[in-house]
Amino acid sequence: MLYRIFYDADNGLDAVIPAAEPEPQTEEAKTETKEAKPESPAWMSQLPKEMRESMTELNGFKTIADLANDWKKSKDSEKNALHIPTKESTPEQMKEFFTRLGVPEAPTDYNLSDFDVDADAIRKNKELFMSAAHKSALTKRQAQNLWMHEVAMYKAVSQLRAEAEQKHRDAFEPQYDKLLEAEYPEESERKKAIKDELAVITKWTQEQGIGKKLADSGLAYDAEVMHKLAQYIKSNSAGGLVQGKSAPDQQRIQGGAFDNYSAEFLKASGR
Image (cartoon, rainbow, N blue to C red; front, top):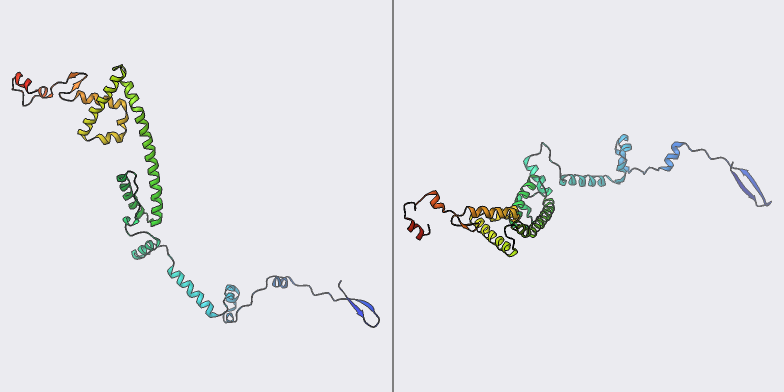
């Protein structure tokens, strides 16, 4: 119950009179009070009632000109947007899409950097990489970033390989020394024998053109392989020394142009 209090100026008396109760609000009225809807612009009265009620986002446009300008901007944005090609897209549309995306016209247009690590191998790898990148429609930025990772991995692998080869080199001479220990008890003799055998191998591999392959394979740092190779070369070299003895004359064993000459002539001519 609400009351109103009145003051009587003549008698100086207060009067308390019950005030009328306010009418209770309906749920709909409460909702309208809570969520006051913005007033629709006058131009929306030209739209059907269903559209006015469902398209309340149009209330933000005060005039039809504002609405038209916004529509034009959206159409321009749509025209300039990058649309993903479909099965119905023409070759020209496909090309335009990838060009705007940043894919170069040719693999060589990626302009990837060279690095001072095994230049020949890097160059070949780069050619293969650019070809694969272009087939995969990578952009220049994507290809360049991936290439940097590729080179970093290549450097890491090269470093590990170099460290492994260095370990083989460090262990090579001690292993070789141990192999010849029984045959050459004296250390100075072993060192000379190792030096002589490596000289024989170096000369032979140069003649055969396989020095680099032997080194790349890692066999050049395998003491047992090198020792056996030196023995093989010596045993198959005409006129060479095998364990301190003269090797058989291959010309006389196999026959040839000197067969009909006298022993004296052959001796004099070194045959």
